Image (cartoon, rainbow, N blue to C red; front, side, top):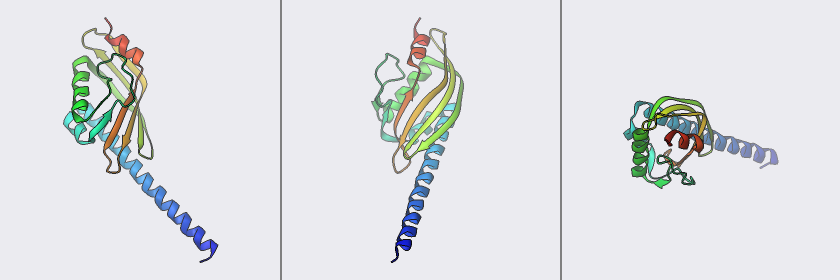
Length: 158
């Protein structure tokens, strides 16, 4: 085998690996798009189907006293997140601005507007980041809202 043949095989192998990675990234982006569409319909069961049974929700999030932004594990915690969110916020807008992927990570950039149901104060995020991580089967294994917590707290404070 010549060095040129070895180089060509290595290049082909690298292209194949990168093509597989791009395919997984595309699949993960499509999953996040389906998650956002389900959220828009209020279809929490569809969301739960797309997350791993032991998903780590709000991974690494410190407790800021915002009831819907609390760290936890499992689909029951995700259900509690959406229940708490619905009990506290009325959404007027939820617009994905961009969805970016690298490997098993996806970031969604979201513009949102809502009103706190008790205080009637507005909550607006011009570019809230949602950080998603996927397993090899294409299920969400971790999620975190990189939110403007000061705005969330202001909306809920009487």
